[in-house]
Length: 107
Image (cartoon, rainbow, N blue to C red; front, side, top):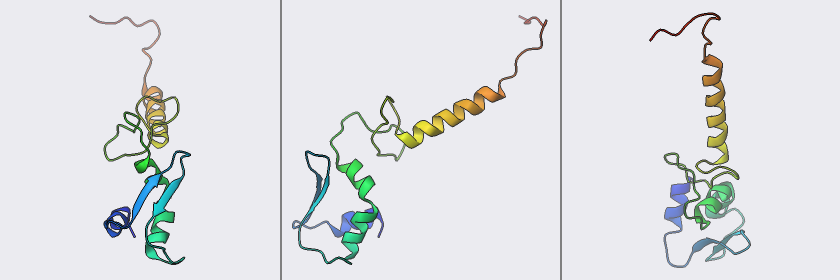
């Protein structure tokens, strides 16, 4: 079950998902059997659901369609996007070509 299917399946008044004050993800609603597709989907998508349901104004990744919390020490990106930024920076730095020694800039 995709995350979108899970949210749709929970779209009735008797069920709710939330993150409590200790940061733990919670489900309240009708009792689910151990092999219930909703229970399995919650387990599969727990990390994303926790990020989505955590109150964090201004603390989410700025990249399009990324809803993860920003990484510690970052002002704009989640851990995955921080890694991608670092990799791209390293590639750009490696492609910089130093001018030949003794050459002068032409103005």
